[in-house]
View 1 (cartoon, rainbow, N blue to C red):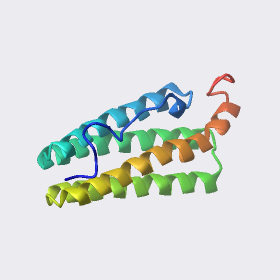
View 2: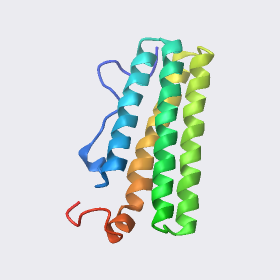
View 3: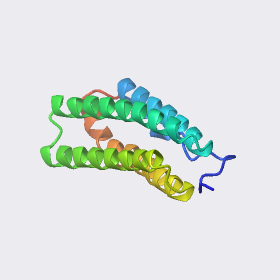
View 4: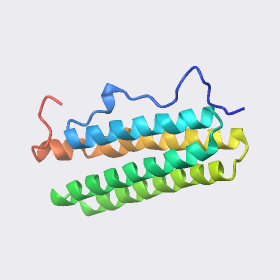
Length: 148
């Protein structure tokens, strides 16, 4: 039995996650939608589907990270902060690959569930902690309206 309960999804988009940059917000929402599909496959013990959906999700995440990193570079985000954010992205990709490996190995449900929870926590943390850290920077550059 996974530690993910069928009646309550752990993948939840919140309005407070919005950055105010349409591209970033749309990509974040696409990642959450893809993660919901992964969660569904895990709940259904569809490990092949899980691997397939995670593969698709990883591509969405990689594209988002590339776009976000390009945006930050374009507007001269401070190097130390940029490098830290890129390292954070790389760590999330490692967690996603770990979930995929567990699904490929048809690991114990509990292990898959715990690994997936860790990945979701990290993803939300990336949006809340990581991305919201540069929200003020983007606002100062005029990419986000003052009301956001």
